[in-house]
Each structure stands twice: as C-alpha cells, then as structure tokens.
Image (cartoon, rainbow, N blue to C red):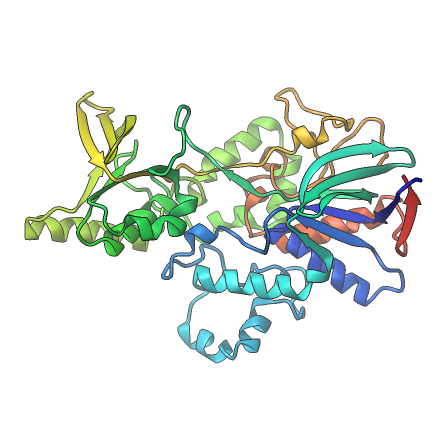
Length: 427
C-alpha cells in the first residue's frame, strides 16, 4: 500500500535565525492573505539554540537591535525586539540604557521568544538526511528523528543550516582540545585549571581570553595569534553601509574582481577583528599585571601553535614565533581554538539535484537566493548562507535577515509555483 506524503509549498532545512525570520514572514503573510502558504521547518537540535556555548553573560551583540528578525521588513511586526522588550516589561529600562546593542544572552532570549510563537511550523529533533527530485516538480526531503524516518514533499526548499566550527588542518577535537563554541559547556571542568591556551585573533578569541582570565583567577591564560595585536572592528557609519540591503544589489551585479576587492576592503568589519572596548580592556589587564609583577595574561603575537600533544595531565603545546622561529613549550589544561566557522555545505544533500556550479565549484545563485538549476524551472532551492561569493559579506550575518526572508518568500510566490491549501500526494 502506498504511503501518503505531505506536500508543502516550503520546506526549510535548519531553524536558526535565518529560517526563523522566514517562518515569521510566512506567518504574517498567511494572516493577511486569502490563500494559505504551507510550510514546515526541520531542525536537528531538540530545541531552538543559537551559539549557546558563547552566551557569555556580559557579551553584547555586534549588530543593532533594529536589525532583528523583522523590523527592516515590517517595522510594525509583533515579532520585533521592541515587542519582546515590551512583553518582558523591560522596554523603558532598555531605552534608559542608551545602547543599540543588547546583551547577547538577551538577544538569544528574544530569538527563543520569537521561535516559540511559530513553533507550530517546526519539527525539532529532525535531521535532514536526503533530498531527491521526484516526478511532478517536487523534492522529497527525508528526515530522521527518534520516531524513525519521515518524508516531506516540497515545492520549494530553503537551506539555512548555519555555520560549522572550523579547526586548523590536523587538529583533532578531544576533551582537552576544542572549539570555542563549547566554552560554556566546558566551563565547569576549567575551574581547577592552571593554564589555558587560546588560539585566534577575532572577537570570539578575545572574549574567551577575557572569560577565562575572569573565571579562573588562579590560571594563566595564553593568547596565540599570527597578528601583531588584536585588530579593531570597523563599525564606522560609512563602512557599515556594506551591510545595507542596497549593498547586496551592488555586490551581486559587480564583476568578479570587484566582488573580491569589496570583500578584501571591508573584511575588517567582520572577520578576525575585535570590538575596540574589549581590546582596550585586555590591554589594561596586561599592563596592570606588568605593574604588579604577576603576569597571568600572556600574549604570544606573531606566533602559531605547531604541536599540541595530550599527556595524562593536560596538553603539551608548542608555540612558535613566526618572526624568530623560537619555540615555547606550554603545559596547558586545555587548548581552545577560536578559529571561526565555515558555511555548512548543502552540496552532499543536493547531489541528485541538477544544480549549476561556477568555475570554482560553488553553487550558482540568483539574486533571489535561488540556486540555478538545469533544466529550469523546477522546484525552487534557496540558500540562506553560503552565498558570500554572490551576495557579499552579509550572507551569514544578521544584518539582512529580515529583508532576505522577504525576498525569498516573494520569489517563491512569483516563480509560477502556486501557493495552495494543504494536500497530500501518493508516493
């Protein structure tokens, strides 16, 4: 007997901030449209979570609260950060705080609040393991959960699978060698540590250094990075225009060499840079310890970790100066790599789909974030993330999340694929 397969106008893979913004846009559209658009979002985590391991209590966002899930698309939305604050009875307090940048833990709470309002659209604990084109212009999306395997038939598929932690070649994670995303999960085991090595020169690396220096007052914290010093993030007004919605148009239409130049020119707005206030604070700590004659925060600049061998009591770490070649042995309780993230590659899941790629092997993507396929048209495949080569620096950032969700939804409804009421087909 054939199995009934639910058909959706939109199936989302992943449910971080990007697809959450899309789910909200879908909900608001359905509230004002006589024709309902059906959608479901499949998330492998058991509940909503966004970089939980780095929700340090005093860390703030690097993006204005006005660039939340909805405001740039619909300033009157009930899903805005301001509505969240009003519901939490903190709106006046936030206004008096005179800051555009909320605590990161507070913004995460806002995201959880918004996700709870659209949880009827989400299947948590569902990991997508396969995508197959099927007759009729559909994609069958296979997801695995505790209850077994389920199939969702999609007219349009939206990938928003986020970023994956990046470790340098040859680094194997273990109980003592790990990525900074696990910081708070490992915090309790660090309390008795005597020395930690933190690798990286960006915001996360500096935050981990400050956190460990505060959290474990008896420990030595060694920061290792190839730069001469931490570089400040450029958040000046003109530079910030690279995050404007209009900048996406400019970038998309630019020649390839101009695209590369724009990324190079403005990399210091986002990559391997640190908020100036945190840089100043770390410098004050280093200077204070020099005055006191008890140096607990050590900076190994123009350096790299060339070896990290686990021993029964820790990790014997070799730090090499790039300038002189001098090597320093550090016996550490843990080595934390704050070496960034890379976009999750949807390629393996799309192996059976006729997706076009450029000369560098990257997916070709239209201005509406739709993957170019051959033959076309067919079921829509959209990317939220992994489009820096076509859409610029904001590809994986919050800045354009609200606008991007609106553009994808508009593309879905303007692509000739009708939005319909729920139905079933026979597999």
